[in-house]
Amino acid sequence: MTQTIIRPLREADKSAWAALWSDYLTFYKTSLPSEVYDATFARLIGDDPQDFSGFLAVQNDTPVGLVHFLFHRHCWRIENACYLQDLFAAPAVRGTGVGRQLIEAVYAAADAQSAPNVYWLTQEDNQTGRQLYDRVGTLTNFIKYQRPA
Image 1 (cartoon, rainbow, N blue to C red):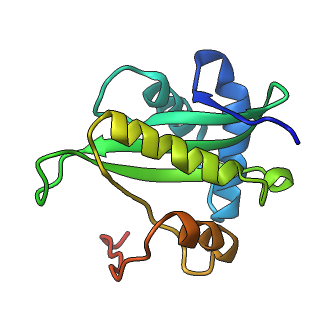
Image 2: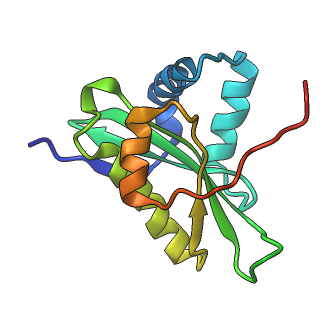
């Protein structure tokens, strides 16, 4: 079995990260301009605690998955909460535990920051992802609304 290493993003990862993130965005039927890629990556590898952080899943020196997360204040808690915004495993490694390892790495980062509440959103019809999420998380009854475009 191939070993998976979960590690923080590095400057040298930009092109591999961009390819994975592009595939993630395609999965959600969206695309973004290159300026958003550049700004997002800069935030992910920056040192501002208010910005997102990111990890890569790497097998045989090849990135095969990514996760982005953010710590933020929460009005119902003293400690920060952790929002897991993006999670993606390349199709070739789905079902092998890469997604779980990425989520568990976020859980560990949250524990290290004393932020026990980790949450995320997914589309209702994301059956593949939800099979994993049902094993590593608890489904809530919240419904998302957003400002109209």
